Length: 202
Length: 306
Image (cartoon, rainbow over all chains, first blue to last red):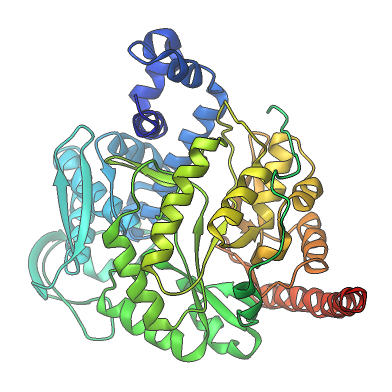
């Protein structure tokens, strides 16, 4: 096994909770198939430090993505981290702009998983996803691990979508659940020179 | 956490490269963060330079481009990267380097920086700075990656010591020696993060001043200062707290021994009142100004002895 292979194993331990749990449960079994030197290196890693590092990476990932998701974060409240950790096990962001990649992929995850259980949350996540998708395109590379990336979009410069709630009126709002009203709303998201986006609604 | 060995670096020749002396003196600056944008522009007279996160501008949106243009018109800018991954046993990404080279040339940066760390391995992007094993093999890996990066980007490169909570086993040398070997062999400058050093010395039980005495301080181009917080008994470099006195003292120590070109206050989160930030910038400026006299005296003495 090369240095790169050992580093890949380390990267897996840092980013994949399942791999980390396997390692912590039985180091000997985990190191099967490695050379003596590599097994001895991996086995000697301090479990507590490793767990702490992996946890801090996850926390950082969540807090970076949160900065792009004001409305979703407000809607989720204290559940944000818990939901984000669940999502984070499904993919790893790659390339530059990882926080935006995570923000968009997390929105997709929330839309897919909350349509029936929490429709307002699903709509809020769809709204934020569409707003970001004016500028960025989210792609997925099959895994394992599944790697998500965003790249800058040239087109389209606008998007039209219908929502069941008064979401544009609450854009950037920190108390979204309290102010959310059922109201069919047609929203036009468009790029505006010199600004990140413009929003019009009816 | 276990203790650490801090030893003298193996190399003997500690003459600083001529190019470091030639770099411009920038003064004291701030990391550019969007929540601070308005105050930064309002107080541009009191901020000598800005450090920007390279990744925010290497594939810029139209908004990012216009922001970068406005920043470059008002301030000298230093690109500070997070994704070079010099510690990964694979070549630094060519695409990334190409974009970075374009950014550096667009803003006319006097130098650029990244971390002595691994941020990806194969397809796995770790998402943050992970430590690397302090071994001879890893020095070779790092040196090769830095050489490649230096050959693609026109401006000089400086490398930052990271804070790490995980100590990888099998270290063949101290952290100070590893860092020294890397900067000497690659002839690059040092971005000395004093909060990272403070956190490491606390978390891994070593003396920060022994570390400072063991590295080639004459290679220090830029210094980072800021504070962190404790989490489960571990000091984290969260860049979200006031610079502790221990870090200010370290800045004085380094400033009296190295001709620092730039000191950066690295707030990332939980920003205080901007007045507090400006006060800290003034304090850093005073430390640098005071140290200039003693450095000038030292130069005179050394000149006379020669």
